[in-house]
Image (cartoon, rainbow, N blue to C red; front, top):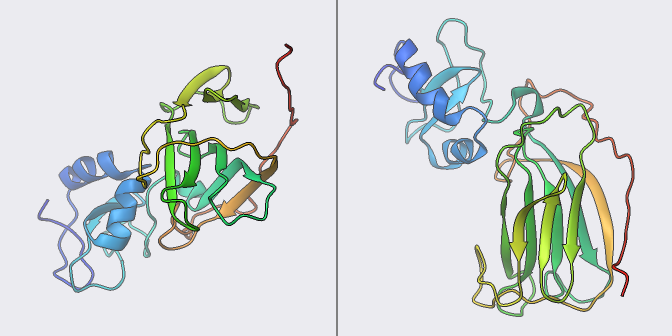
Length: 230
């Protein structure tokens, strides 16, 4: 990948080989975009590849047909859009010592649903530990409604999309990050938060791009709470 458009370095000519090799990996991949944005490396700008030089403090493109400005991965029109259905404990204890349940998060409209449980990794405030993971990319019509749920008792927590379990959490499981404390459930009342966040630099979704479409709609058909019959 020698022929690139580099801000703060040499300007090269974009090649079709670069587009295929780079953008195949980075388009709709927020992790790739994160490292490009914060660490330097390869990324995509509306289908155009570039590399950030170590001395550069911004991004641009000059190749024919490319638009100026940095547009990190994900669906271009949804870049920076972060819908979530989550639950927080109705307590005065500091976060996350009584947990946090993220039933559904989707980043940049990439079609991947994440379910995550948070707790304190060492029992102290702001010491985040989590057990969670993504679903496989859901092949679905996102103009239709979908069901996101958490099934939770003393022995397990299942994150569910359209009736399919995408992630399981059990007391004593190791964290996917944080720690050293392992998964602990808490006997606390939780309340709902149903929102769409707009990301910023350094956040999971990254900031919106010049191509992000506003307003971003988050339609909710119903919210239901149930408990098993004994």
